[in-house]
Amino acid sequence: WRLEQIYNEIFDVINGGVGDIKKMGQYLKAFHADVMKEEGDMLVELELESKEVNSLISKVAKAYMLSRLDDEVGL
Image (cartoon, rainbow, N blue to C red):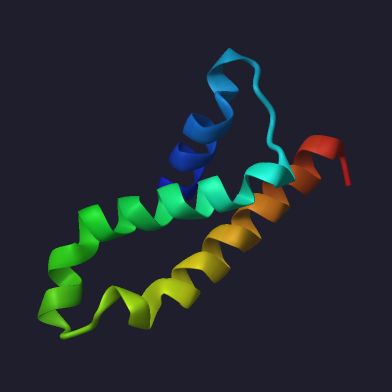
């Protein structure tokens, strides 16, 4: 649901906005910040640093965004 929430915020979907590949960086940054804010304590517990999970977070978020963009153009 976080992926969807950030997507809707970045692209203002509620007001008719649609995704744009040009905003991939903005989307990834916003999603990463949200995960760190919400799950930062878990990372501390697991003795992980954000740089250790950044690529995994980005991989998941990028796949989601690309899938949404495909859905929007009907591919």
